[in-house]
Amino acid sequence: MDLDLIKKLVKIVDASGVTDLEIEENGMKVKIAKKIRNTHVVTQAQIPFPTAQPVMHQASSKTDETTKPVKEAEQLPTNLHEIRSPIVGTFYRSPAPDADSYVQIGSEVSSGSVLCIVEAMKLMNEIESDVSGKIVKILVENGKPVEYNQPLFLIELT
Amino acid sequence: MFNKILIANRGEIALRIIRTCKELGIKTVAVYSEADKDSLHVTFADEAVCIGPPFGKDSYLKIPAIISAAQVTGADAIHPGYGFLAENANFSEICLESGLKFIGPSPEMIKAMGDKAFAKDTMKKNEVPVIPGSDGVIEDIEEAKILANEIGYPVIIKASAGGGGKGMRIVWEEAEFQKAFQTASTEAEAAFANGAVYIEKFIENPRHIEIQIMGDQHGNVYHYGERDCSIQRRHQKLLEESPSPAVDEDLRNRMGDAAVKGAHSVNYEGAGTIEFLLDKHKNFYFMEMNTRIQVEHPVTEIVYDVDLVRQQIIVAYGEKIETKPRKPNGHAIEFRINAEDPEHNFRPSPGKITSLHFPGGFGVRNDSHIYQSYSIPPYYDSLIAKLIVWGRNREHAIMRGKRALNEFIIEGIKTTIPFHLKVLEDERFKSGNFDTSFLEKF
Image (cartoon, rainbow over all chains, first blue to last red; front, side):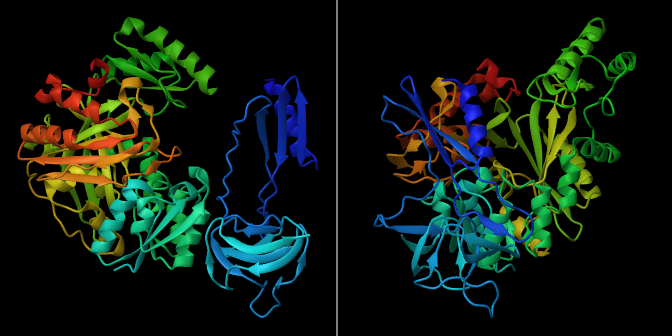
């Protein structure tokens, strides 16, 4: 395993707009995927950077060494996608108390659309969708607290 | 009294804090990482908030997640336990700014005692004996030599920027000094890109004796005697006891008074521990101060009949210390039960506990978060239980410890229970004549 090559590949993926890169050579397969999951835009300049995570498979072996921090979801139909909170805080449907909600049931959203705000330590974090589709369920009431990884919305993928 | 306390920790200490909160009628909030969703502290608390993925830096060390959890649950105070953020001055400060009472000392106090040079200086000013040594780094080799002669051999040359034994040389006589100084410096330069060194008296095979202190906001500072924590492996404590077999009443008073004086001079608030080294001539030297509750606090609680976590909470609320110290009663020993295999170099042994039976009976205390069929997550330290026994005297405590350890059944993983049983059979341990080199010779 050429660690230097892997490092170079990770750098390339990280620095570019490429999100998935898969290389197979001499029985060794390397897959590098950049996860941009629910990045939240913070009003004060603190933007979490998406990090490239190298995932290595040996073509002959069946074991998958990846550790996924995401809770095992109850079996959702494959066309439904859960949006989960990346932080602990308070859930708000709209940017301000008297403003319109970001989304309703039935709203069409695309990757990057802001769905809601989770307020933490007086900072309003905008939670964006990572998929395109239609909002079919809103799982939390306005103004209620949410914990890490708590499901917020169900989106029907288009 | 506080209405609701958030416990910013996990495992046995989280449970410990929750128990005292319940006795004080205070509501509790547990925070947990995804790896701890089946943990006992989550079940015991009134409310629980998931704050992040398994790794400590993403959960128990993530200040915004913890503060946010306190805010959404309406907690008015945070108890940091030990480890994690317990001695993080930044966290103490953010709590203050967020209107949450940090159950522990102020950010300034944490910073002050965390600065080793400052802590040593403060103790020195209060006539607390400190390890004789150079005032900070020493560059001139001739100056160093003169100082070494003043201190008296053996001396130890240590890298200022370092640790882990690198850039360290013990010098037994003057003739070796020059060479040792030069090699230590070179090694430090190579390891830490900083060749600066300082020198200290080398205390051979010391005993590690620490004094428990408590201070309140009314200027009261008390000490609750000593704990002997000399049984260590790679600087990790394995077994602790109170009183120390090496400390008589006179020495206890002198060490205790020194500790109180030092703490008093900085208006210390909360629980704290002052660590000393005791040499074979019964001279004690200040080593460092820990500004938190410690793992081994139960041995002090039993022997002095004091709930130290309770004192922490009431003192943080602004009340005076409730339980004043008196003479120690009997002898207590704590055995740290780790999920480790003593037969294979103490390598970690996480996994599922298939069968569990805690020892019981007179004079036995268990502080633990494990239960039958619990799976120990691999992300955190390996401490799974603290078994504490009390006896009328040391011999009785040892006997009871043996009895209790033999009753303790934990199957499915390897633990250090067999190791502790061996220690209790050791003649040197039984005699009370041991020091921090005990395990090397074991």
